[in-house]
Length: 137
Image 1 (cartoon, rainbow, N blue to C red):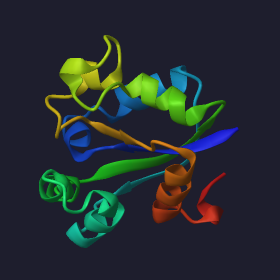
Image 2 (image 1 turned 30 degrees about the horizontal axis):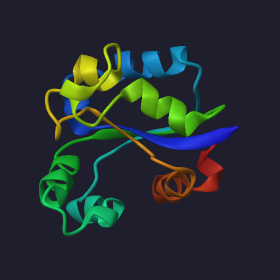
Image 3 (image 1 turned 30 degrees about the vertical axis):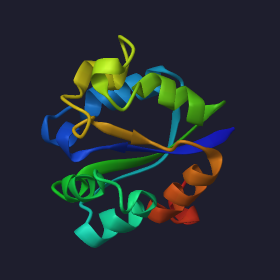
């Protein structure tokens, strides 16, 4: 079984989409191993997205991610990383497949409602950013 990090971003939390999004994730066969609501400080958002430092979207992204509460979740499943990324769709909702979370709920590239780890190393790093081992069941 593979684990991955999944974040329901502040725009989705603010629009009361948390339940609908989690319902789709569970219906797709993912198991929640850890979950909490967080409000990232700007320095925490910068640390989490440090890999993108220097890119044009880094500042707006970190400000957005620290603008309100988010739901961080550790998910588990067979092929969880690739499967979750397929379920959420492309970063740009206009290019996302019909039926994906981003196609259904995102308003634009920056306000794309969710984040998912893009590989095994990233998943381990991102999960440990938000969860200690004792918080994962």
